[in-house]
Image 1: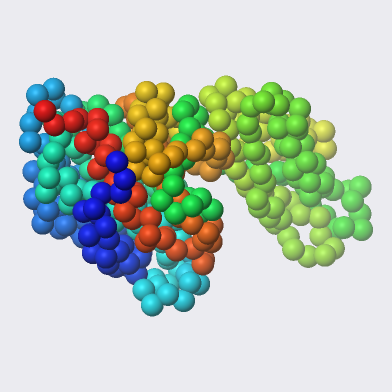
Image 2: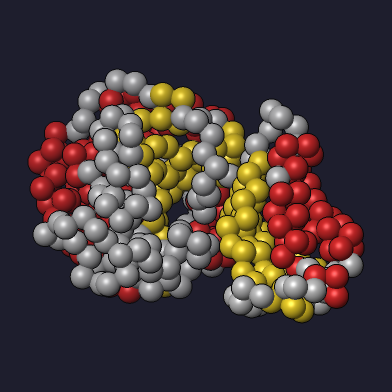
Amino acid sequence: MPIKNRFAELQSEITEWRRDIHQNPEILFETHRTSALVAEKLKEFGCDEVVTGIGRTGVVGVIKGKADTGGKVIGLRADMDALPIREATGLDYASNTDGAMHACGHDGHTAMLLGAAKYLSETRNFDGTVVVIFQPAEEGGGGGREMCEDGMMDRWGIQEVYGMHNWPGRPVGSFAIRPGAFFAATDQFDIVFEGKGGHAAKPHETVDTTVMAAQAVLALQTIAARNADPVDQVVVSVTSFETSSTAFNVIPQTVKLRGTVRTMSRDMRDMAEKRVTEICSGVAATFGGAVEVTYYRGYPVMVNSDDQTDFAARVARSVSGDCDQAPLIMGGEDFAFMLEERPGAYILVGNGDTAAVHHPEYNFNDEAIPAGCSWWAEIVEQRMPAA
């Protein structure tokens, strides 16, 4: 069953929605215009229920099938927020907001799910209920967690949930997925070393925080090199090194480090957090200084359920003819919170030979729209076939 003809017919309209959203990007939970646009469209399509304000600025639409003999309820989720990046595409529909752009394709995800919602509202050729979920604040704000904490899953009786992300470098409209752990847990740390500042010509009279911090940066790499099982995954990256003085002849009183830890299992996550604190405490003690480590747990590991992943791959093959095994991805994805509450699956759809996501020259490829819309529609029609 290839691309649905209806989405080929709707492609230009869906593209217009996508480009309008692209031109008006909104960050984190500030998706007021986008959320209003989504709600307006869902009402225009004839959704049976449209609710705003879930997870602050999230939108939920409910579409009932021609029948409901088994009480099946499936959730489909798209993210709506943009990134704090200055766009450099030169497109005629480039961002109107300086310092904000849709550099990850959430404009495309939202438009594709709107397209699927329009089709499903027109046809209702399924036995059950679809809940379309439009989420704010995927880019670091945890909007998925907030929608779940607002009781979304129980309120609409969602039994399984599916998500999608475009993927530059994959052929346009092709798919890839994997069962189990897929996207990494994303944690962060702030480390402050305290010593005794002084004149750079008299280091013996100081407790040198730059030496402490430099040792810590190198020692933290032993978490991956010597503490982790080589077949497991962990990334520890120090991304900021800030001294309290920038003078060439001053040994600073304090140095602040900042960074991130990415892991693919709960045990590895626990171990990495423990070792960050132990290593920094040991380094500080060795050099006679002090340290304060603040560790923030971010998104959990995103884990695809086996049954739903197999089904999602079969649907992808029915749409595009094939579905590849996706690699492990050390980036984070807050769809993980929804998958912690309900079984489901997350799939990648090819964006073609484009700039990478989070790049100022990235742009969602509108040629992927028919495949993405078809996959979402087929998830519904194949999982809940009409009698």
